[in-house]
Length: 180
Image (cartoon, rainbow, N blue to C red):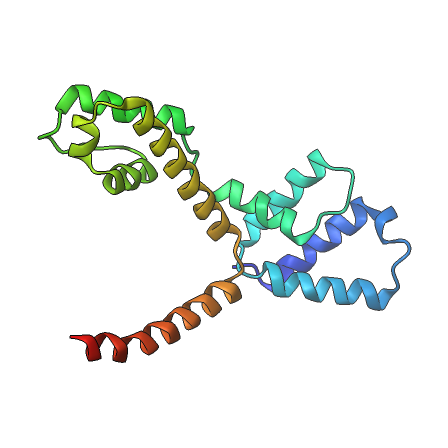
């Protein structure tokens, strides 16, 4: 997790590089922006944040938004994923190699999850590989998007969602007990 000093150093580096972007801001506005950065980027490792900022400098002529740095940081720490079509190829190889009675092993956790959702034996015994391929690819894309969203999500949002889920679950419990 980046400390305020690390975030301030990254901010200062970017401020120096993109000095024209800052010329119309008052010192108070710059200070407020830096404080906001400290709040919104503190969950990212300091070295990762610096690397994300350097990457941004190499790709953009505009001062970065917080979301751009969070995206760049997530890209740095996220595992390289296969494309959905490559992952489907792994599924097809496993079907041919071990069949419906074997237990498939995939090096990609999203592939493992989507196959589990679809059902290994169902996939192996299916006669409509075109539909299976389409469903697999859609499931893989959906899970990849969800993983990406979670990677850039602010911890405050994750905590709020957990509190809401806990509250919703606690309200459901009496109803479930009453129906038993």
